[in-house]
Image (cartoon, rainbow, N blue to C red):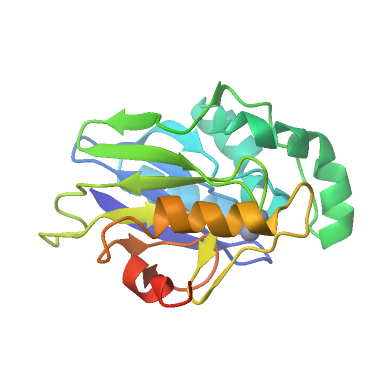
Length: 218
Ligand SMILES: [Zn+2]
Ligand SMILES: [Zn+2]
């Protein structure tokens, strides 16, 4: 697998392109918000001859869905996320005003719901879905237990893409649209901190961390 990270929009979202040896790609929160960011993403996909298979959202706050319309239109895939966050797609305009994030084209409706226990699979890449409410009601983390060779490196530990559930040294806020601090903490403890300590975490914002490092705070 190859992992490419893009830091995009004025909120500094980490968007990811995961691709396999056959050039099939899974996008997680691409979040591109302007022409330059769209071009950089499209150029990467074209240069590497990638075929976009899935468009996944960790949750549906506006900063994470800004690239959905562009990716859906260009590559013919529909966004997938947890059903309990779908109400946030009705609030894109409100979020745009509230956060000062310009909305060029709203995200299309979800093409598929993702739920706890689901797996997203293309050859060589398998992501398991964990539902952790609290930052948003339908927040999900994608867990890759056996990533194999990643960016040319062998023996890579498990990987976790938790969106805004977990950050390096902190966690997502719980005071927005249906947030719940208690649910967030208990979900992090029961579902994420129980993963192997060496798991590398790729948060929705900011630097990478590990489950071992984040366990120290709980
Ligand atoms: Zn968020
Ligand atoms: Zn965010």
